[in-house]
Length: 221
Figure 1 (tube, rainbow, N blue to C red):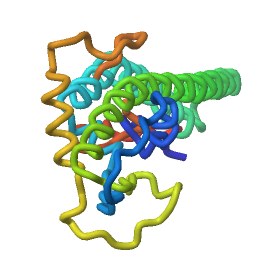
Figure 2: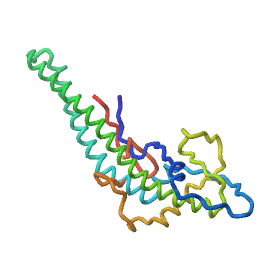
Figure 3: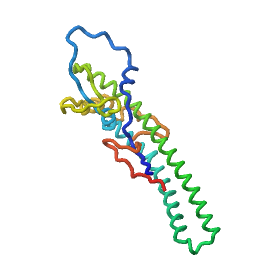
Figure 4: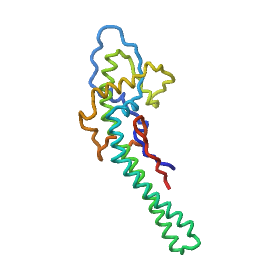
């Protein structure tokens, strides 16, 4: 079974929940109700912002790459011992074969455990990034929707919540929201999203999304 590290998988962003957590909406102003409908790929929008791209890059460097390197080395060791066991079946002593098999079994168990731990850490760091940047995105989205008299904006990147079968390209507000986000939260004006280790670019995964290239899959031996 293959196990990938992917930065920004198709996570459920939960924008609706974030919206509900905002302060109660003010009483509607007199006048006709808004009727405009818009769509946004919220996950894609977050990953396309400058902060999102920086978060993906940092996560790749601080978490994904080091753990993948360690797993690659362990996998290479397992492969080498497996080949040695197969090719030396006729020449190795029984004790030597048993030792090789024991080493392979122990390394395989360690590989699987480290792989699962690494995946869990990547997902945890992604969640922190998505929470922080998603909250900011809701601020930008809420103001945009109000200023432009939208009645509803659908997240087409979260098809688990519903299915949008078709939408005109003119109602996709994703580029507008990315632009407004970068204007409101310019990169370098504030500290990067906190994470331990510092998250900021895992995404990564096992990944990706626009602005992030997922690292190669790590195959279980």
